[in-house]
Length: 449
Image (tube, rainbow, N blue to C red):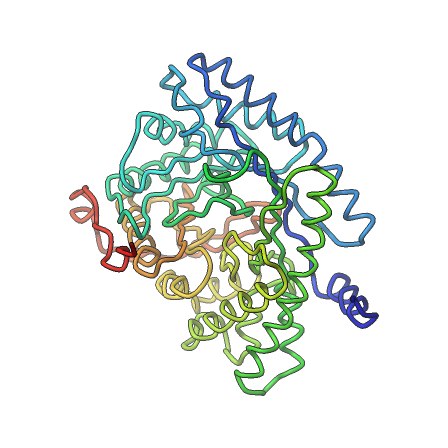
């Protein structure tokens, strides 16, 4: 039974502590949309998305109004296009991205994810065609997001794919002045039910159509920790756990209601702490509330490990359908505290890489100089993929080499994507390392059968 105190606490979390539902994401299978004629395929994709998601935005707005719970984004994810459109007799997949973009605009969502390929163990013809199309697709569209999974614990790291993605990121940056790279993620151990962009796609093991919800609430956790200032880490962990429980309960309520109204199954609640550039909605502020002078200082990785674990423990008690990524995100451009620390030189890419060992996702929304070599970008991807592969967790890279910008400049991506200082990258060359190609074998801990 929900008590009066719980209701009042929820009202306070929403009105004063930036608590919101970050996204309702409808996953839609496109496995029945393939056709040799790419025009027919595009038509089938457009028709299916507009049919399935026609009421998504209205339903989200109705729930938001009736329950008084902010729902920031309404989104769609689809089957990886390289899988769904493999039979298309075309070398150019850019028209498929255009069809996705038109469908997203028609149903009113802000992003659509799934212009994706899964190449952790090798390429099909469809994979290669899709990857070649990424720079043009992300430059020519407004809402389409793309992801490529280049590694997994079971398969190892496809270093040929890693090398290619470094070049793809550079080309995308050149064509789109950096903006397209904000919609492109390179994964290790990508999950099939992630509701967060830019990495969302509807996995091949998912139902025909499903609703996934991503909650947030860094401001709520920060506020809770302010009330236990100076107390032991045992108290800190328990406080975060209880707060995550309350946040996830709200997400569960919205997910169940959206599922009922849309008439599609409820998938998962992703309880990731997803920050925004707004003051008071920062993961960095939480870490500093634990006693760090600045995020990036010694102790940051330990503080983040505690936070991530406690969030998961609290969330799984509140919902039996926790999934997606579920943890703490550390996107530099989308977190006011991370931006502050990076601009002052207290947070480096190397420290961020260490932090990704213990949190959700990885090196996220990091602006680097426009002249950063493609091989360096590839090597950063390889490092991050190695962390995910060995630790059996999802990691990702969303680097943005901004043409014409250098260390110390600032780049504005707009909206929730925020802004970021251009951060320095180690100048030592990994050219010969990346040129080897092949595959880094899966670790021994992959042998689970």
